[in-house]
Image (cartoon, rainbow, N blue to C red; front, side, top):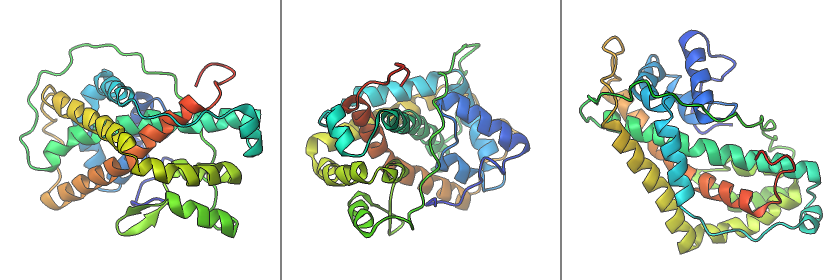
Length: 282
């Protein structure tokens, strides 16, 4: 269940299917995130938005800037997961690979989505359209996409204890509690999810973690605003959204930004705390 209406990847056709494919390639993950799937529900909005930001995306300028800012945040570490601890948490060797891939997907895609929103934000708040010269013929080799994540587990089959434990991981979205997909993925390992439910809430309240999250989001947003100055003018054949739609876009950008700090810093902290991938790819 998403916290925004969305157009699924399976239902995207024509230009939207093409844009979805370009977003996946530029993000280095095998899926399109909620933010862009939401924009695709409004006629012409994702087409317009992608036309605005795609020069910075396809050239690699935006993704690379976002990943650098996320890495520079230097979030405090989680305690290392030793093999014996992982076994006690119900996590086998193959499960470690799956968990690393889940964390890597969120750590990689969230900065790209935040910088996408940062480049759209000026237009969504009434700023003048960009009038830069673009990025020339810059060639960029996008990273190899990460492996697919498992299908999100259903929440209605969880034990009462696990449901109670995951309440501590909920975040308020639109006035209602919402379990971010990073943590929802982990409920297939109940003891591992329960461990995170015990350690993540105190981390969220830790000033050092909050400072790292602020550095990550602040750095990514600033990079997006800087790149905005160099973007070429939007195509004249794609009209910008009206004021009401622009307000919805801005609200979605802010909402997504609010949950992304945790996804970036926790995702990276998990990657550092887990044993290395056997193949060395994640």
